[in-house]
Length: 204
View (cartoon, one colour):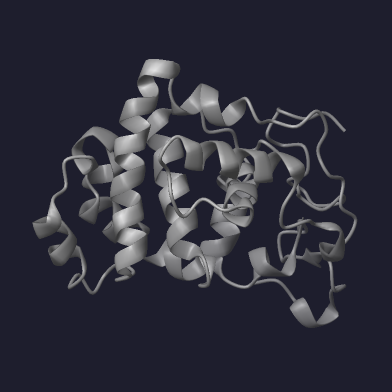
């Protein structure tokens, strides 16, 4: 585990000599997620639908909590297959509301189902992947400190508005920006982090 006490506020040097932000050094689970998944491109419908759902479930909660329950979410939501989730009925909603292994929030559960249906409908217009990635900005932030990392952007605001017009819900500008970070549409790894530029989407 990283020696957080001797590190700067913005980057922590781990016992492997690699620099990460403090949130990514706070547990082995978060470190694994940061090192191998966060910020890497996702270009499949199922992958994007899953991440969109999980970002919605995370709103107001910790990301580590969502990660710890990720497999349970996958089991509960048919491995995030949009076509299968789109067919969920009121009965499935009631079952999900008593599932102790996920986040039992009716609005978020119903949004996941609504978003599955919207994802399926969007196939007629080219699909979720092309739709989301069409909002990739012309440049990415280059944060030197955590204070430099934005929580929204003009593109995330536009994406949220566009998704809502297509029938999606629980997709505000903050959720959409978090999604953009998670899938590499923007690179908000701090300058100096060992993961900066690792997605291949951006060249500093």
